[in-house]
Image (cartoon, rainbow over all chains, first blue to last red):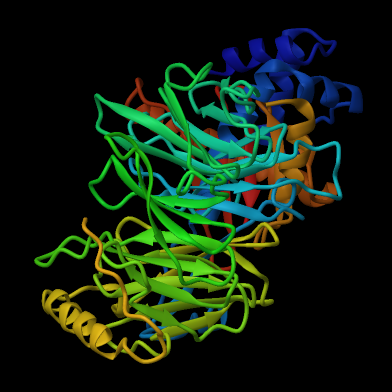
Length: 468
Length: 95
């Protein structure tokens, strides 16, 4: 082995001296407590710039970072002698406790988080999209970072950027290596984690055939063999694409209500299991149902109720003994969250506990009567309708009270990710509250009946029953 | 990884909570880069190098096909993590 070392030494640091001397020095180093010889600054720099060093460094620093971050203390002494080292809030039993904070000094700073999405394939991966950093005009305007919950390292798993602020992002459901981004310019971009590039591997054209306005909604719908990317921009244009070919949309249509002006779409959601019918929210506060194909393709029904732009829409998704897939919730600048059924064109209920714009809302993927909402005052609220419909069941104000732009439940329904206006992603653990029990579905059915029964007050006309 | 990123990465890790220092040595155990002062560096480098040689020798002795990939020394007060390169560089972290 010592022979190998000598050989490498000669390759990496051309130091004068025959082999014998080097060997002697080594031996003497072992036998006596001599000082190892020093390298000159020049030699050190040479080494640090060499290819082999860079490869070695890249590989081993990765492992080091993980080992460093892991820090699961196998020596922990439960008798309490170690307690002075213990840090962090012990919030056993509380409903909402902070789990992680994802923030990158370089890429997250001074950027607003515009969208969040959990990976359908790897539940520990979360992508966050960011808009531009006004303090750094030379940096790319649009950033998307993939964060990893599994390891404790605090740097993103993948860093992507593009020229225009990214306003929506999502993992391509049936293409595990692809990330779809909708940008402010109207361009749809595709990033691929198989490529080493941080820039998009595919982009849609910036032409009238595609989008020329911000695309706040990107959604992959369908099945493994037959899927489309649906995108809607704020000028009411809806395009359907194949992820293999983004040079032109497969089909596109203007979303127009009653043959008048197009709808300024701010959000879109597909009810669980539906690939044809969807719901859109608009800048005027109106919500519409629409369908992609069929004789009535385009906007179908109008749902009025909000008095400000609709910021978020979420369709009921918890699967259980009772089907609630006709329900959806919306959030708006008008300080409220409203509960609707696709069968009625007026809200079933309005949740009015907020004192600022409500920026996003999402149903729990597992619990039938639970949804999360975030507002501009830094509040993250969890509403369990089986428990109380007047006030949230659990609420927390994020440290620093930043405006919270997005909320997304993880697929298991046990964590929520919240994105704020300062580039930070907060992951909160939801405790017992998140776990559904089998009777929750029946209970929710009764809660809905009560809501409907009490609905009469405050509305001039009763809701119109709509044919589904 | 680029050269500039190496500097940045070292700085970033150094600033993490709990990290006392990072030392990179060559195959001989001579420090190439360190975030600690000179005397500490020399002391650590010499000691770790000897330990590393012993550990590596042990692994190979037991099974000549095997090789040492990572070494962690946990003490009451702290921990040293040692990542040996392929006969070339070793990097260790004091936490």
